[in-house]
Image (tube, rainbow, N blue to C red; front, side, top):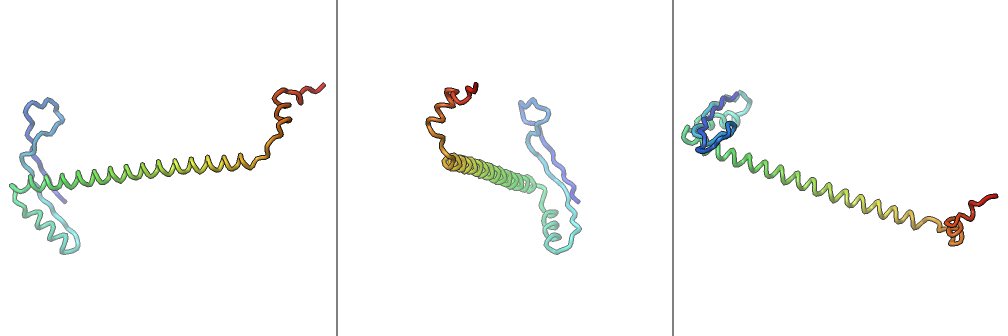
Length: 125
């Protein structure tokens, strides 16, 4: 369980009511009921952070959050790029398969093709 509080001062000349402004105070408590000495020790060390060090800690956490967001965006971009490459390769393979299929078809004799164009074979009386 954690209780967290922040105080934000509005920035000068900012008209938006939804803008947070500048963080002037951060405080809170964390209670961890979990197995393991590592979790308890981390909880204890966080609880002992002085109030004046909280803005620095918040900046560090924000920096890590931004880093994770950049990494996620990079992974997504790489994934999209790989998907595009895969689709392009699939199109090339389909085009090659279609060309191969067409090359294997029996060619119509020129005289038959000419007769079909002129409609000579369709004139049945």
